[in-house]
Amino acid sequence: MSSYYLVTVSMDDLFHLAARYLGDATRWDEIAVLNGLTDPMIKGVMTIKIPGAAPLSRDTLPWMNTA
Image (cartoon, rainbow, N blue to C red; front, side, top):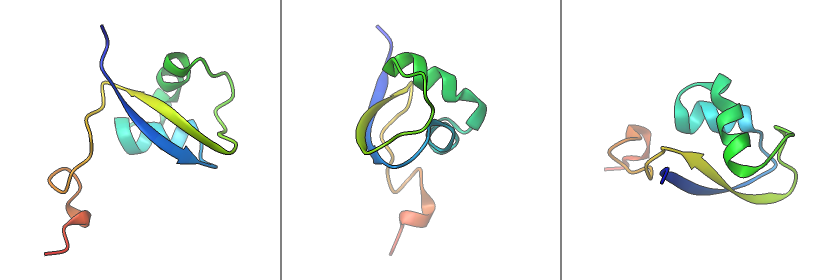
């Protein structure tokens, strides 16, 4: 079974999601295949599976630290 993380996005695109969560915008097609999508543009609000991603935390995103 493959692991994935769910994210809810609005008016975004798979290029930005791949860059943000996978570290490489060219991996957008992995997200498309996992979600059965052919258009990289996200219209409206969607919950998207991100392959192999882990939930983001204050430890993985230092800019979220407010202390």
